Image (cartoon, rainbow over all chains, first blue to last red; front, side, top):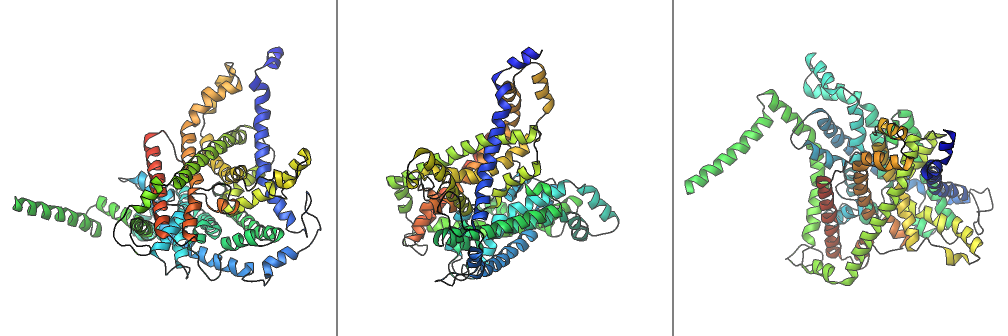
Length: 277
Length: 307
């Protein structure tokens, strides 16, 4: 028995180590640059193999306070502007996403699968929608309204998915019928019984679609024309125009934002949804 | 004859009126349910029409316009350019093979990773999962920056390679080449593929795998003949969605510029002289192709799309 085990096939001997190696390499590939970015944002220069001149907060200061050179702006105004735009998108997503998620989860109707596909698959990616918006709503692009409605369409699928996963864990028919038999009207049942029960999914969906809207670059780049740049445009300007380490600090600000969101999602307790982001 | 048409017309209007009437003031429980479904789907439909269907239709219309800035007349000029000009054909070819190659590469990496996550006892699994899903919330421009950190002129791997080969760092830096772009695509596509495949992997029937192993199959045979057939629908679904992602990548290419792809050319049409008609024609082709591809693939393959 032991002899047979030792002989084994090639895959019995090397299969597991090879698969583990792929896993480790993937982890390094994904995580290493993130760590390096964060570390180097505290360095004063990076000429050799590794950044040197620790610890300085000059890069962070340039990003947070702004350098005052040319049209450079501080991260604060971009962050605040993007926060507002993304919040607007989330409000629209709540209004459109929660009802349709309920319709698909609760009722059986003709064309339900296709409604579901349309609700979960993004209709068009940022750049295509951007070109369409540029043509259709040229006057809105300077005010930010175009960005808000664009974000809400682009990120609606994430809201629908998060809310749906909450609905799927509830016995919707029973809850609805109990409330109805106790005398609540259908709109009242939906608003005061169903929606509060799905709050975990709704909160998680709001956080996710907010983050993704704040991070949306392709659409913002095409539609944005002037005024305060949204966060993603701010990052782009830093990556292409600023010094390398300033860019590292700007990207690190963004990493912190994502980390904050991940932690808050964990507090909400919708772990399944985090992995879906 | 004419009377027939009139009566058919009135009958059709009548049918529509009854349908609308039953939604507005339902008389049976079934009709009330339909009214609820319509009410629930209405907000999303309004958003879809105003920010999706209407802008895309306008984009479609101006792509046939004779005038550059307003929709006027009808011409196929912009489409003819795309078909006849080898410049555009070349871009289309680049886009397709590059997206296909990166899709295949990212899924080939994501399958063993999903396998390890599902089957092996791994230390600090929640940390691993966080690292693997983190890039999903990063925009393409940040993925490009990650590649500059790794393979740029002062990148970590560039330094390592320069040290090992003895060449200058500029010669071994690949971040702005096709290979650098390839890695940048993988940076956003592997986590996406993984997300889809993990869902598929969690539904596998492990009894069959154990039985195969007990009956003497090697791990590779077990994977090939027992696991693979089970994950096939999920695998095809992942191919479709990741391929779509690959075709839509723009920010990454805008920074790294390794290869002229369709989305980058759309931006160039706008940046150089604001040729919105040509850009719209290109965007229309993109949209029709991807939409048709998705519908076709979901309809005629065993693909399972479970996001």
